[in-house]
Each structure stands twice: as C-alpha cells, then as structure tokens.
Image (tube, rainbow over all chains, first blue to last red):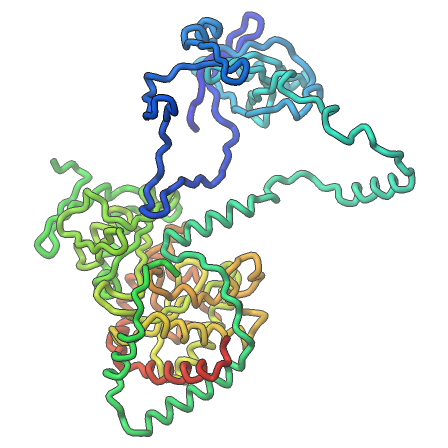
Length: 283
Length: 309
C-alpha cells in the first residue's frame, strides 16, 4: 500500500510516528476524450480571449471575483503566509463518542499505520480508545489544506476520517416541502414498521456490486480483444431450423451422387464479388 | 553483458536471450518461467501452424498469473529485428511466424495468444469457429451437450470439425475452410444457422442473447464472435488463471460427460502429446475437402425464400 502522508499523532505530551494510507478508492472507469476523426486524445488549452493566444503556466495568477468582473489579485506567497508551516501532526483536540458524529460529516478515510518506533504507542492508543469506546477529534493538514478529522479504531488498526467543517454541511431545513409533513396514521405506521422488520438484514457489503462498472469493463475488455460488443440482433422469426438441417443434408447427398462440378472455382468467384472491404472490428 | 539469469539461445539463425528463468509464474502450482518456456518449446510444432501468417493479439502477464495483465496489439519498439509485423488499420501487429517469434513472446510473458480467423494474406476467413460459453465452470456439461449436438449436425453435412477447450469454462469448435473462397457474410449465415439450431431444440439450455444479464443460466452460443477483426485464443495457448489451463485440442471421443475443463493444465500437455499426438494434426489437410459451398448454397436458397427477416 502506498504511503500518502508521514507525520505523528499528538495528544497531550505523547507523539506517535504514523503513516497514512488511502482506505478507499473510487473504481470508476476512466474515459479519455478523443477527436472522432483522427482518434487523437484532445488537449485543453489555456486561452486568453483578450490577447487571443494560449497562455503558459508561468503567466497565470490567481484572482478572487468579489463581484462579477471585479477581481482582487492574491499571490501564492500571501496564501502561504496564512497557511503557515504545513504541520506534520494529527493533533487530537478532544475525545468524543462515535455516535455523536453524524455520518454526514464523514468525507474521506485513511488507514493509519505506525511508523518506525511508533508501534508501541500506536497499540497503546488503539487499546485505550477501544476500551473507552471513544474517538479522537483532530486537526490535520493534508494536501496543504487544513482538515478536521476523526481518529477511530477500525478492525485491528486505527482509521483517520477527514470530516467536513460544520459550515460545510448544509442545513436540511432548506429542503423544500419538509415543513408540510402531514399527520401520521397509527395503523399505517404499524404496517410500515412491520414491513421494515421483515426487510431487516445484516449489512453484508459483499452482496452489493457495481453492475454498471462491471458491464463497462466487460465491454472494454471485449473491445480490446477485438470482440466488440454489438447490440443484440433482433432474433429472426422462429423458423424450423431442424427442417432446414434435413434439407441441407439432403442437398449434400444429392450433390454427392450427381456429377462433380469444379466447385472450387465457382465458389471463388462468388466469394470475390461479394467480398466487401470492411474495416476490421467495425462489426 | 550476460548475467546469471540471461540465457542466449540460437534458433533459426537468430540469437534470442531468455531471461529470469526462475521467476515464479503460477506460484500456486510452483510453475516457473523455465517451465513455461519449456512448455512453449514442446507445443510449438503443434501451435505454430495456427499462428503462421496471423496477426497476433497478446495478453501479457508481466508479474505472472497472479499479477495484472494487459493486452498488446502493437509490436513494441524494443522488439528484435526478427519479429515480423504487419500494419492493419493503424496497428502494427506481430505476425506469428517461426519458433523464434513464439519463444520471444513467451519470454515476454505473453500467455494468451489470440488469433484472428484468417491469415494476413487471406481474403475472407480461413476457418469457422463457434464459441460455446457456459455461464460458469459448473455448467460445463452444457458446453459438452452443445458440442455433441453440433458434431452431429456437422457430420450430417459431411463437414470435418475440430474441438478444443477454451482454457476457461467452455469449448470452441472449428471447421477449417478452403482459403480465399468464402466471405464472413457467408460464414455468418452458417454460424447463425447452427446457433439457432441449438436454441430451437433446447431453448431452456442455449441462448444467443448478447447481454449477460438476460442469459440466465443458459449457455451462450457466440456466433457473432466469428467475424473479421475478431480473435480467439490459439490452440495450446495457456490462460493466466490459477490452474494454468491450456486451450487444448481434443479428440471428439474425449468430449463426453467425463470431460472437465480442468483436465488440461500446462504440465499435462507434453505427456498427452507424446501419448496420443495432436488432435488437430489434420486440421489443414481437410480445408479443401469440406462441402461448405454446398451447405452455403442451401442456406442462401432458404434465405431467399424470405423466411429470415
């Protein structure tokens, strides 16, 4: 597994050297955009409509649009100054109960592994958190952005989940229609609860697969192998194929007994005239 | 600079360096690269006729059967001079001529060698292939049943047919054809006929449905697979599966209910060839003896009557 970040967890006076690894991955099938005519991957240009030319990276600065068309320029140095030194620590601020953090806050998960000489303190923290059933709320700087995060015990290790800042989570009150929720009929409620109980199962994530991705991958593998998927041909009208076989069989027998023809030449001719130049793989 | 793990060999007047002979390729079976190269050398007299003058598509396993594989169609820049290529639709394909080419590919850890149904100089298909692909290895008996039903059809039509395992879960049937005599439209007419023959007599067991989700537990008769530009695994090519199963030519009498797709792993092939020879030995001899033109004539007359939409 690829190390994404090295640093330490600090709480109180304890520092635990750790490494972070991405715990999840998105498996979307990635397509590139090609020019249909020549099948070349297209390139995006950074273009200035005023100067009417392509702009190089060195010519690009950042600006904040405070009202349409009005910008204040902000330099990289100014941003850096505010960020300060990119910290190399996961600073645990508080310990809270897991259920206090609603799943809406969770953003991205990272496995925490011990770094050299951190194994003992790592086990200690893991055990202490498991025994007290607490999770740590922490601050961490990742990809030069400061995040709020949760450190928790996950199976036989520790997990760090970045969480959204409270002002990044929208208010559900703003969803239209929620205030017009009608009266609940007790009888209907019982039926609904009963239905839920009937459908209650254990969470077995292995049961669920991304059908769409599997189908896309299957199609792509087939195309690479030269076996392009084509849409199902409409099945021809049901015909009596078995009868057809008998007819063919009979014709083979007749042709055997009747005079021999220079078969080869004849077929060659038909083959040539009906041979169409077809692009390989276009079918 | 030959290191300990480099073994230059001379074949057909060219020098080829075999490398990393101790590399494990099928770790679960303890098969190393040396075993694979030995295997390829052993089967080469039987395999090469099928690769001769054909544009190859390769599935390479640079880290062995357990690692990631990738398809290769374009001949890489670093290929030695003795590798012949042919440009088809903008792709520079490797042509499968000669033991030196085959061993070089094997040394590159190309396991699955896929071949088109024609040579680079043929006009039209060199043979017909019908792919019998059951939903999983458990339904392999369906492939056996389909193969035997079709064998009966081919026999009635006096067409000589050949059968091999796919190295996965199915069987693949072949009818060699005379060169430059038929078009893919002609052969499609025939493959459509045999596919519909199967689905008509056993609709609950066989299907021509392209979409997997609609096939259910039926065997997919892939009659569309046989077309220009498409490919199929070569006889004697090995799969990158855990069992190192080989796409193995069979004798028709071996196609019975005792046959299992797992019967033919790489390490058993040499003994098999020694004991009984290659079931495809006469493949190329029958090409000009097939009464396919007559069958096709019958199918075309039938089509003209407008029964097929």
